[in-house]
Image (cartoon, rainbow, N blue to C red; front, top):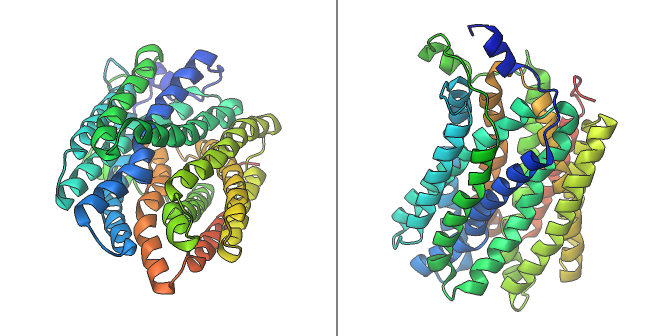
Length: 420
């Protein structure tokens, strides 16, 4: 049981005061640094580093090795996300509940990235990427929980858009930064993005207040462990939202994880690395537009499900285009559709997730479980995608699977009843 006092009631009350532009700016800045530090390694630095160490003659071997390392790191996310959320729900530090975990996650993330660039063995690369992803999960679990803590429902679509818009910008900025500044991107790139994540998170830590939780009754290990099971029968809307998020993120990850290899070996495009940047730029523009404008429109209309359904379906259409019309021009159109769908999904689905949480006292833990559905598909997709491409001797099957996952994810939001 949770001890109820006027102070604890205030901490767990549903927020009603709108957050300011300064709050949103600090929040968006933190996410920009986070995405640069997380996605630049996934898109470029890690594959190059693994390729340099493995020296494999067949590209699938490099992708499988990357997938194994990414998959092992993904297992860390299974633990780090809900555990951090649960612990931050109970943290009684004078600095607040979430702030200590945001700071600790940023330090672990940055330090692991800086050391990752120095690794010369596959084991070392795997260990430090797993530590880096653990830091990422600790940081983002606590940061995401501040939406439920401090943002009123009628602002959550717009504020959540400032998670996804920086994701798009961070991807392209990170790629351009490390390729423009360094001849060997992974040697110089890791320290730069490690510094960026710390610098960009500091404004949120310094300027955004975090309510202090009064000392509560002792937490037993039994009640702590039992809290991680959320019955889909008792809380069906939480279960459907979680299932939808898993499916849509697998669809997006299958559609984007091997995009460089699709350009190189599927379409046989010269200068595939440069073309990838242009594709990401198209994707980025539509992600930003969709996440901010459609997230705000969702707030105004008070509707979430229809936006999530259409967003997921658009990603399915984009994947089918890549599967059955393998052409560079079509790839650019598909990138736009994928960005439009995923940008809308990221902002509105995040708002939807905050509205189906079972208990205000466990927001961090419950959102941590939701966040698993984002991190694990991204971590597992390179390995699973490479195996699918190798088994089916081509990319068509991979993109069909991506489309199927996205469309099933769209259908999974239809049974939700507590949110329009």
